[in-house]
Structure formats: C-alpha cells, structure tokens
Length: 155
Length: 83
Image (cartoon, rainbow over all chains, first blue to last red):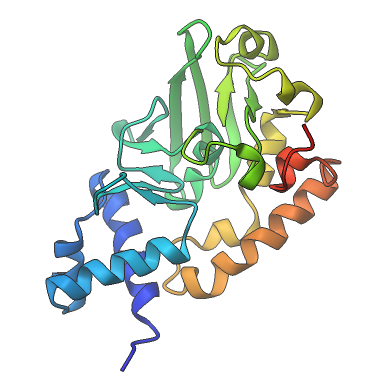
C-alpha cells in the first residue's frame, strides 16, 4: 500500500542532507534512513525528483545534481554560512533563496562575474539583502523559464 | 540565470543572448530576492513542504511577476517564446 507521507519525508531527508553536508545523499542512504529496501529508496528518490522537477539528476545516473536552491554539483555560486564554504547554489537566482535554509544566519554568496571574473558578493539574512558588492549587481535571465528556455539543462 | 556586476558586464558575456533584451531579461537584485522569496520558499524546511508548499510556488511566482510588470513576458512566464 502506498505511503502518502513518503515523498515529503524523502524530500526533507534530501534537503536536510544537503544542508548538513553540502552534498546530496545517495538513494541507498535515503533507503536506510527511511527504513526501505535499497530498490524502494531509489524509487522514492525518482518519485521526489518527478514531483520536484526544478531539480534534476545527473544525466544517465541516479545522482542528485541539483536540488534547488542548492546544488550537489559545484557551480560558481559558492555559499558560506558562519565562515564555512560548504554549499553551492543551483544558479544566481536560486542563490537569493538559500537564505531561507539558514534561518537567523548570514548567508554569504560569492561568485565570479562571467564577463570579467571579478567577484560578486551578496549577503542575505532571513530574506533581507545585507551586502551587495558591487552595488550594481543584476540578475539576468538569458533563456526563458519553461518551454521558452529551449535548452532545459542550461542555466 | 546568472548574476553579473552590471548590465554592461552581462552584455559583454560571450554567451549573452541578445533576445533576452527584448524579454526584459535583466532584473534588479531586490526584485530577484522578492521573486525567490515568496511565502512557500520560507517553508522549505517544513516537513510538508513538498505536498503543501511547493504546489503554491507557481501561483506565487506569477503574482510577483505581475506585480513587477513582467506578467506578459514569455521569458518570465515560462511560455513559448514568440521569436
């Protein structure tokens, strides 16, 4: 009999695993934590990724590459909390959402500008922008969301 | 979906898509933080996020885009580009 609470529990394990370690858990680890067989753990992962399509597995694998706002696969958007750089944001836009995963903490996002390589620094605390350096930082949507993006994996 | 030091820096990026100009591809950082800081985002650590909060995300995003004057722009609304 299907367990209606399983997707939520799986999602929470993945998100909290990413927050704790900076990388996403493997489905075998999910299985153990959920009290499932390894095969059932893999299916639980696939079900969550289907229900949360803004994240994705690395092509041709069962490895979580992206689980926004964080990425298990490194990106240029490095996130530090309390002086420790352990996380990566899925993209520059999702970087502004990582603040909600670390309540009460200052979330430091640092990335090289794709034009010049000079640093971009954004700090947020509980959703508020506290540092923007340089002050003129902008977001840019190069390809549209959804079907208008054209190349789905491309950010 | 990147951050740049300024619009000029983005336009110099070799992979810059010129069509993004007409689609108002640039967004000020405070607007971006609002777009990615809707109510559902504040519940990503809740035990029922996937079943209760994630489904609200689409409507919230549309509401923010409408407020930001981007409600009729295909790039932002996730609809096929007319180009």
